[in-house]
Picture: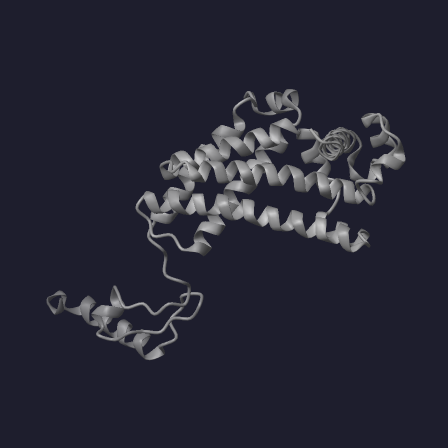
Length: 272
């Protein structure tokens, strides 16, 4: 190994050490409560060493998120490349996401302590903003891989699912999983409130949401409010009656005709 190669390996290893220390500090103190000094102590390096790799505390946090989301995307891509059955593929992606959450609960909660989009307002250097855009791009790519897996699963169940419907279904499932994860932050409180164990709540939530999505796309669509009706009494009268958005008739002549018909029926049942 050449001197240059050895130094590069040392540089990469030191950067990984700093990121690992930063993950612990951010998990314990949140983004705004953390400092570069805390990270330096945790990593056992000088404060100046951290600035050789990252421009600021916020840049360090963004870089950490880029690394984590990049690894998540790589796992999703590996699963996609296996050519699994649609439902098996989605379940595999779900399991990877569960592990992603469980391995770094504190860091996930730290993300909630700061509005990520507002973080860009605190980044001033072009390189910092590039790192921020990298996180957004990786996040979109992760979601697209997951959303496409949801769409394949729904299509395999016999429904023709549009991209918009797949996006809505994927978003609802994702939101439910994150909500379930937050509910299990304190397992004792969760057990006290529900009488249930939190160990498999993520898996159970996932399966429930998959079943709900499959049922939703296979259910016949309802006609939108305000649609023209042509069945029942309206059809028997031989006329199509326009309805307002609240379903009330706007054809007064039709109402009068109906009342006249009812009056004749009350006099002679043979009219039927």
